[in-house]
Length: 254
Image (cartoon, rainbow, N blue to C red; front, side, top):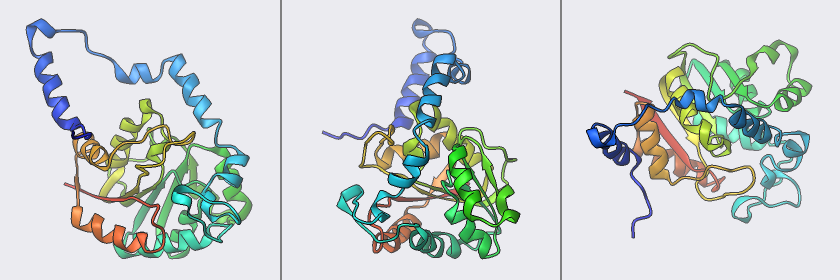
């Protein structure tokens, strides 16, 4: 039995049914539903998880001394600098980007790497705690490069960045935000999108776990981008030699 559900195919079937006079129903105002007080309360509850304790004990837990993370992996990199230097050299540098946005940048370590290498880089994260940690270690002149914002509502013009990076973020979003977040990622991108999306480790901080095929179908259907399979496979081979927990996706604007 095939466990994968083709979302795009289901959407086409649904649209066909909605055109049937026997199936007519009022349009659902999804943006309004996402602003409903009950949904806002759930969103605030999720956001509250990302406190100091999260960033000190759960954020890339496998880097912390004596602890293991996904797949039982363990590294000795308590400040995560080796991890993000590797990610920069492997995923960012080869793209020769001029303008980069790191969506869900956490404490800004990849953002700092990009800035230090001369890229016009910006980062956003929904957590004010993450920005406070960034400010504690980053030079004052780059503090404004980190915005507090939701991935589902990016404060940038369309096609602003030739490289958009989103590392292990979408699985953290609740169901009522991740589709809009994909639309926003694709909207502000002018060229390339590099994502890592966890597909096999559901737990308290990963409320949304989908198959690789489902994520690809969502990006292509609601984001209007192209999934570059050969580039994805190339980047996965490179990254997994060092960090097998990553699941890389590479998309291009049409």
